[in-house]
Length: 178
Image 1: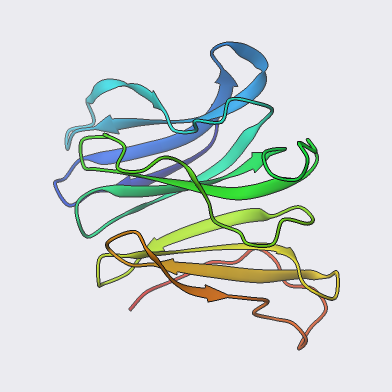
Image 2: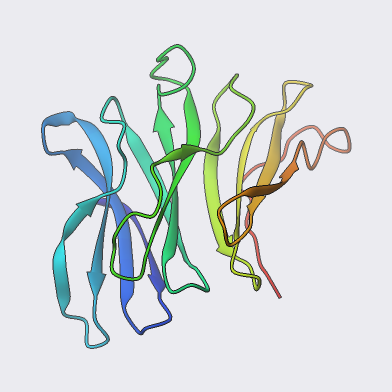
């Protein structure tokens, strides 16, 4: 298992997300999570997050949601740019507090050209969440992008090229709400 991330949910349960070899194809990777109770004992099964089962699904991040559930975002290699295994897109999926999926996986980034990487997800006080990542801007440099969703999981804000044209290279975004 690689690149683990953890979130403490409203009910005291915590979720750990990671990526590792896919069950049916050791050369491919998938995103998984597992839930633990307050004393650190796991319950349920290791659960696969991604529905697309081809190439590599990597670098998952997780955030607790006000509803008690959680949002997971990750990089899916080869899923959107003519199955180019060297190009990644940002995908996400939402689960309830018991690990049941509330959505199918969905594509977050609008720009499909170039490699999208370094996803980061944070919950908002109104029950929604924001996902940020970096990828190519209109000038061909790395830039930071973000997309906001409300509690009903509707896209309510799409931010394009946060750094462009102020600087030539931005990457590794992080978010915070206050």
